[in-house]
Structure formats: C-alpha cells, structure tokens
Length: 241
Length: 280
Ligand SMILES: [Fe+2]
Image 1: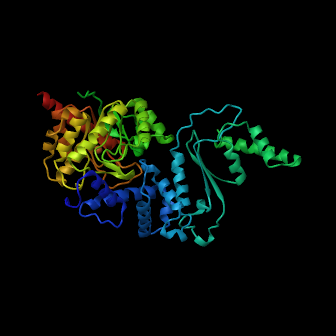
Image 2: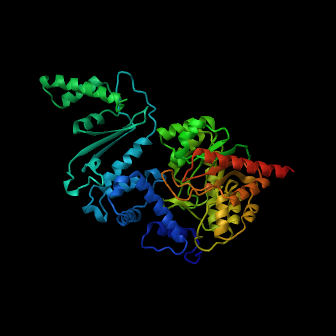
Image 3: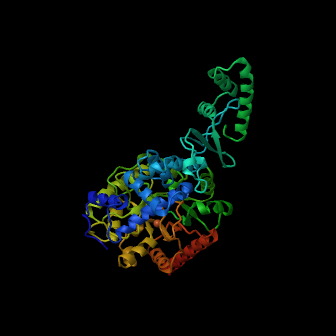
C-alpha cells in the first residue's frame, strides 16, 4: 500500500483524488491506479452503452483519448450516471477537442443517442388535457442539428457525403405502450410543435397558423383540411395527448 | 437508542430483474433496496415497475452518489430534496449512503473513494450526518466501503474510524460484510475483530455478496455468488445483534431471479441458525 504519497488533510486528499481520476498526466502509484481504472471504465462503459453508434466510429485508443479529453477538461457534475452522456455531448458540441475537424458532428450524434434514454426515463405525464384541446406529449425530445446524425452508423458512414443542413429530429414515448417513436420534422411542423406545450384548440391553432403564413383564401381551405388530418394522426401516435 | 424494526431479507433492485420481480412477486422476499438516483424524477417502464413493487414490498432507499459525505462541498440540496420526496412516497424506514467520497469540488467520480481515517475527517463528517438525519426526518445509516489504498497516513484503524463516527453522529450502520471481508484480506486484519469493535446496536441493515453498485447500465465482470467466508461473517454478526434488514446485492453478471432468491433463502437460513445458536 502506498501511504507516503500525499498529506492526509482533507484539502490535500480532495486534490489528490481529483488528480487520480481527472488528470491523465498524473500517474497514480500502486493501488491508487485502481481508482483511475474503475472510474474511467465505469464512465466509459456508460457512454458506450448509451451511445453505441458514436463508439463504433472510433478505434479503442482514439475513443479513450477522446474520453480523457472530455474528463480532464469538463469532469462530470451530475450525480445521476445515466445523465453522463448528456454532459459529454454538451462538451463535444462546443467543438474543443482534437478530432473536431474529422468529427464535427460528434456532439450532436452523442446527444441524439442520449435523447432516447432521456425520453425513456422522462417523468410520467400527470396533466389531463381538456377533451376539446390538444397538447404536445411532454415525454419528448426535439433536437435541432447541423448534421443528419440519424443517418450515421459506422457502416454507412462516409464523411464526405454527410450533408450539412438543418435537421429537426423528434423522439417521444407512447404513454401506454411506452414505445419510443421517431420522426424527422420540417421547419413548419417544428414551429407548430412549439405552439403546443400548452393545451390548444386545434381549430384555433390552425387558423392562427394560416394567418401567420398569410395564406390566400384558395390555399387556406386545403391547409386547414390537411392540418386537421395531421393532428388526428399525431393524436393516434400519441405525439399529441 | 436506535429502533430496530424487523423487516427481513431482500434483494437490491436492478433493472435486469425488475420485470421478473413484478411478475413473480416471490414469497420468500421480504423487502427491496433501491438506489434513489436511478428513479428520482423518472417515469416510464422502470418507474412503473418500482411503483408496482412498492405495493407489495417495503422499499429501503440506499444512495450511491447522493451525499458524498467526504467532500468539503455542500450537499446537492436539490438532489437530496428529490430523494427525500421519493423516500417519503415509498415510506422508506431509513436512508443510507456510503462513508466515502463520491464527488469532490462538485465533480462526480461515479465510484466510491475512501476518506482518510483521521480526526479531521471525523470532525468533518459527523455534522454532515447529523444534518442529513434532520433533513430526512428518519434514521441515516452509513455504509462501510471496500477500499484499495488509503489516502495519506491513517491515524486509526478503519473500524475505529467507522465506530467513532457512528457514535458521535448518533447514526445507524449499514454493514457490508463483503466489504469487511475484502478489506480484511487486502489490508490484513481479522474481520471478526472489526465487527467486534463496532457499536452493533446501531446496525439497521446488512449487505452480503459481490461488489457495489455503480449504476444499472454497467456490465462489470465482478458479479458472483456469496462466498462462504462472507456467509460466515453474516452468521457471526447475527449471533451478536439483531439485523432488521439484510440485502443480497448483485450488481452485475446477474443470474436469473431464481438464483438470487436462493441466496435470499440461504441468508435466511444463516440468520435463523445464528439465532437458534444465540438462544441455546
Ligand atoms: Fe454494499
């Protein structure tokens, strides 16, 4: 057992454990290295389990280097281990990592993979929507991305063909079957969804939208028809509750 | 005086066995231990399973990274409030967490790191435990961890450290006999002497079996059945004091539920035999 390494006052011990777990340059001696391995492996496995596509893009040493970049620059703050990939995604989205030229979408991909866990564990919906109104299912996640992260997988991945753009990816949990549903949505639908966090009458909502879009009388009629049909479909899919 | 209700023998709830438990509601199971971090603020499948199990079994909440007793930082009060709400909702008879660091400077290790066994650490931890007991409005039990290296020079033995804190904080103990066994081998001491040195009237809960929980997503390689020396320590402990709740913990490499229930039944037998021995 290595005991002479550090002072035993609480301030020094905190600094020491911080170095052991979050500073890759610091080399813990003897059995202290066990703690570095335990924490690193634990966090690495959680990231790997929740973000398997992200993980599949890298070789083992690349992946470990990425993790060390993340852990040393932005150690996790959330006590809930399940939320770690969300923290890591936020770090990689800022783009301050070595491989960012080759993997500019890394943070977005990680966040998108983590979104499924977020939705799976979202709180129960305790609110009741009035029968004549509609409301967005609160157990949802809407990601707005520059990269089509929903098309990335290690086998399909071809960097040069990844088209940069604007992608709105929506996930939600069915309140009864608990199945996770996915949909890529247009900017218009994204705007519509934005109006639905509070209960709305569907007729009123569509009228407002038609007005905002300055639709002619001729265009308005089919717009309202299609809108009503769409809302019906979304109700069936429990995107609206 | 710490009140000792008799709850029985149970399992640590893991997502892998949660559905089976709901379907089978095993008779020989008396209670379940739950990590609040895995459920607070959640809904969905696992939450609904927990609610169903809570109808049938007493639930004992046991923190992993809830309190980080060692850290010089203040508690994460928001997290504690959510955990209290959960514990109250399920009527947890007490709360517990490990005597260790799970974070420093606000950064999470997602592992349990040892405190130095020093006077300063005792002075630091005792008022924190008292604060927690007041806050949760129920007994708080500290769990002994396994550790691989001591940070700096120890001023006392681990058992003296644990015993002094329990007495001064007037708190309960969650004794992990597996951790005592592991430490006794790693650091070469007599496991039974460790047990003898503790204020056993404070023991509310016991852990037997493999290694600690980090989080249910983890697939560690250390899951294994309880070994005989650990059963022996459970038996020894049971002859010395009453054990309100004993939890068989299996964190990874989970076998099917039947196997785990078998271990619950072995624990019951060990305790029964120890009690017979005590009365004879
Ligand atoms: Fe334990």
